[in-house]
Image 1 (tube, rainbow, N blue to C red):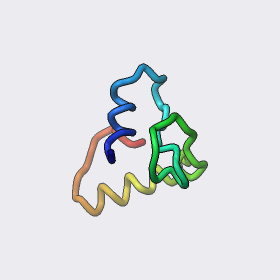
Image 2 (tube, helix red, strand yellow; image 1 turned 30 degrees about the vertical axis):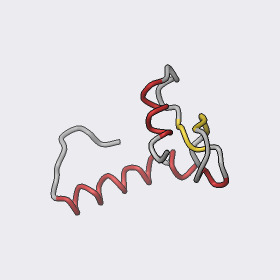
Image 3 (cartoon, rainbow, N blue to C red; image 1 turned 60 degrees about the vertical axis):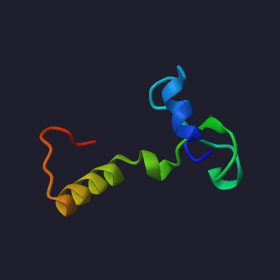
Image 4 (cartoon, helix red, strand yellow; image 1 turned 90 degrees about the horizontal axis):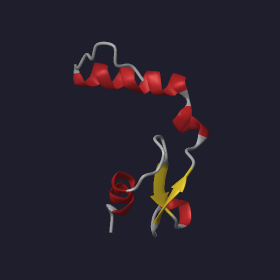
Length: 67
């Protein structure tokens, strides 16, 4: 049951960038459905900061692969 959203995301022909989440309360349970990302999840500055912190904590450096 926990992998339903992931399975639907990789086995359907939805457009790139479509976010799949459970239908239930706060997207915690239920059949998967396409939904929108929250504004914070689409924020480029936050993505860059998360990427930089993750690279620093893991010691990994990826050339030319910033979000």
